[in-house]
Image 1 (cartoon, one colour):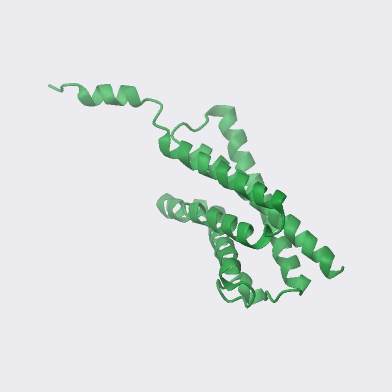
Image 2 (tube, rainbow, N blue to C red):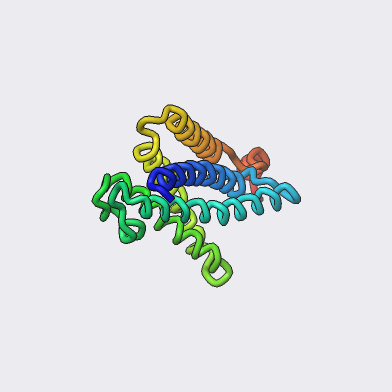
Amino acid sequence: MTGQTLWFISRATGTVSLILFTTIVVLGMVIAGRRAPHGDSATIVMGLHRWLSLGSLAFLALHIVTAIADGYVSVGWLSTILPFTSVYRTFWVGLGTLAVDILLAVVVTSYLRHRMPERSWKAIHWLSYAMWPFALIHGFAMGTASEPLLRWLTVLCGAAGAAAVAWRLRTTHADRERRALVNFQEWS
């Protein structure tokens, strides 16, 4: 494969990864929200969240491998694990590396979820709220410099994620009114 082909594959898989991560984060907020779906719809949303998470790993792995194999810029294997060690655009590549490290922690602990305390798993899973913006900023700074379509796609991913965060923070318990009534009752 030529360097230009690897470059296009790296950019395309990075873009698909960002879209998938955005979708996964939005679905995760829906699942964890106070107005989470119930019944069959909850099963569908949870399954979609899990399967897209697994699928995104393939695109991310291909993105990393092709970025390194391209050779046009110097991004070594160590830079995919240790943040801020890349010679090329140290900070921006480092943000991508941080996103990968957090993602690996979330994936590994998700597979070990049944063997660890719920609070520990949840605390590590909350790191996804940092992983996604790191990946978003990495993609914006690294892959969209001269491509307006990619820039707008990244901005749309950011807007979708921000809207999901706003919804997650704004939603209340489904029985909020009932809880308020109970709290104001006099107990004898």
